[in-house]
Image (cartoon, rainbow, N blue to C red; front, side, top):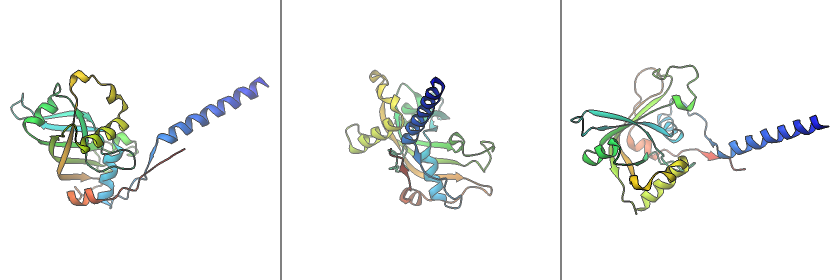
Length: 205
């Protein structure tokens, strides 16, 4: 009897855990490789971090790449525009305030959908968004939207030290470089990228 109760409880635990995980998952199938806009938006919406490159003040304008977290919107409402929560205690924010030119590189590899492909393989997609990294007005509606998007994807950010003066930045995209198969980069305009409508839904239990 005790053994049956134990296994029943174990099954209920795993079912409950699975339900908890499923309730938080964002569901979207991997797009067709030939639908470049869909693939680009999928890469950005499903990722949570990338390499943000700015032009260094301390290094006489040399490129400075930094691992940063980002979000393009709350689950199911991605805009394609990356938002960041940065502090001037870090070089990236200081650089951007001096020279807005920057780029964000994102890989499919962290999503676990590249199978056994090497991160550099064209089979494992990569995208670089180039443009202007700008500071948002803290009391603007866009900054409010960005904070919601960031804190939803990165809850830890809410507890970061207020004395570090974290502020919301966004990347105003001017160019898109994407490779998701052999044959070189795929053509994709910023307009095509931003106007694409994502087909995402969240499991709600």
